[in-house]
Image (tube, rainbow, N blue to C red):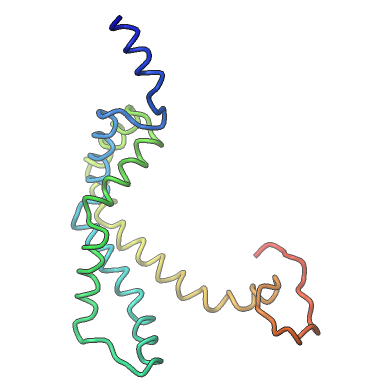
Length: 168
């Protein structure tokens, strides 16, 4: 009787749900890849990147942001998406995408000097990439949107027909 219950339990289990041991490995990896200090640094970097836009919106509406806005906004973001919750989400994703053996190999890598260096520098690297993308997009998007017919037109403006979509 017990063996049949085990079989039924295994058959009814969600195959996309990782087992507890694999989930624990995934969480260990997440904490190595993105320690809480790196997570906080990434959130601060994100705040600094969106701050100019928020300041411009405030100015356009005739208001100003408080002097301590960046610090308060960052604290709010860390409250809204706490490290523990984000880590659990990331662990779920890692556990679905890697086998237990692969997770162990990744953990071993992130425990090396090079792995620790990568983990510590990744937020800054991604911040630099994000900054570059945010600088380039405003330069390139208008022309691409016009070329692809994605610029909104007034109902009476039928003089220019959008060109067929092409690769950016």
